[in-house]
Amino acid sequence: LLIPFVWTGLYHQGALSFTLVLGIFYLCFRLAQKLDYSREDACWFAIAFCFGTSFIGVAAVPVSWSYATAVAVLFLFLAIHEWEGSRRLPVIGLFVGLAMASRPLTGLNSLFFTGAVLCLMAPWKKKLSSVAQFTAPVSLIALAIGWYNFQRFGNPLETGYAYQIDAYGRMVAEMSLPGNNPGPLFSLANIPDHFRVFAFGPPEEGAIGCSVFLMSPFLVFLLTWSRKWNTMDYMLGANVLVLM
Figure 1: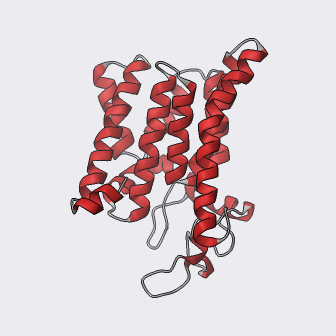
Figure 2 (figure 1 turned 45 degrees about the vertical axis):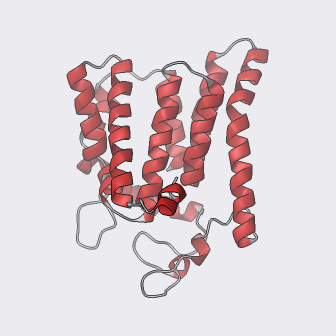
């Protein structure tokens, strides 16, 4: 996505990020309308997501990881938008795969779409065919990422994290700082402390973040009081827990 702009001399990350955020705002708005929000409430929903959650940090910070995350969020919203519309499974798989190419963990959203297909499609032959349509593009992109990583680092699972250095030349993977646990990128040992900050962290000096419910109290309403949860809601909740 960046290389054509770099080649032509038109690259400006701030301008590209701003364009991505505009697209995400519009997709939030249209998705809310598809889910029977009024035009006014749909606008408030888009404002809440873009400017009332931790996404504001992604939208505003001009560094590479925030741009990569904005790209991933855009593709995930396109995938959800397609699910609530034409529901073309190869297209949904392509969007999820492209999100994964930007931020690898977003590939775990495949769990929700696979589960949704298995719940909604009938008979089993139709279920298996539909899952194959969705997973084919995701799998191809995963293989391409693995090949790309192998060519760079000799390891299909190494994304470059182990070689990242900070402004002072220190290896980030070896530093023990708040919010950056040393060791493997994926470790179950990281979960308790990260979840404590995510759910209960107070705003304090030097903190890496605070409770999502303090920053975005409207989430309490959406998760508890707005309506009764259905099967799809529980599947989404389970997928979010796996991602966390």
